[in-house]
Image 1 (spheres, helix red, strand yellow):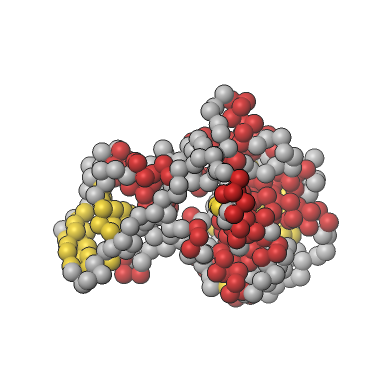
Image 2 (image 1 turned 90 degrees about the vertical axis):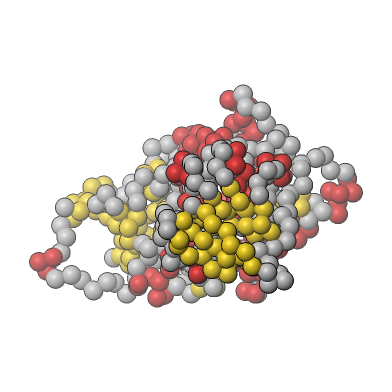
Length: 429
């Protein structure tokens, strides 16, 4: 028997973007339900011991008031804190996110796993792994980057026990005792290689880049430096400062300009300042391209080539590809064909209106999937303040009926599921 309930807004994803939006909706007394494990991606898809690359001052989750910043959280619990000079440990950020949820979104974060999202009688019908079905007038997707980890095409055929993506970590225990290769040159690659090396796992880093780039170690900046290259929530420089402060202005640019800004070279790939020293002792194979990767017994054998065409063989027990992310909403297995067919895309990312709404009425995206529409700030925790405020206002004032999409073909009469209405809509106070 399937349970059927209703809500005005369903938020899918309980990371910083989902939590911030939920807190703002609750303040405005908009009925919503938030689905996902609180800070789940940060807990399950990032290795313990990692340090955040973003400034601590730019890592606060924006609530409906300014009283619960990361600074105030650390002061409450007696943790050392500095806006820029002390890196933020992953476990502390997770603890902060959980405290934010308890304070602002108490009792409304549900760990349901969405299995399908399709057109419904008054918007959307969401089905969850525990058997619940939720009808929502609007849906906001805030799933972050983890579903979009990119693997080079020619390695997808390697068995999963021999290769993985950096977004799969998480615990590193299953790599203990295994000779490991990390492929990449950005923060994910260098952080992971350093953590594996510190754990005593034999690790080699392979990169196409001829040298590794790292962020400068934080230090007090002169007035001239602040004027010529101001610090923003996503980095230093005037172009990044504009992107960080004015995403709605970026939305007015051409599609090519927005996409160029979203994935510009100014943001990487480069490692965090703290990773540079921790990488000492990790063998490097720089300026190397992987020509092939094949199974040899219970190991993987890679053929590498440098810029001069010289080749060498490297074997390992496991390869971790820290090769970035590519937004492709078709990889979200819960979106029905009826929704995917009506989505207008930029590359694989949804084209969004100024209200973060897709071409499917009532379906919104926030977070990294919104970067081609609103610029690179969407790739950072700092960017969560904009959709939270804007969407909360929009959803609180918009009460128009969402136009129906083409509904799925009904099942045969004798196969129609039986629904039990579990809870009627009610406004959260």
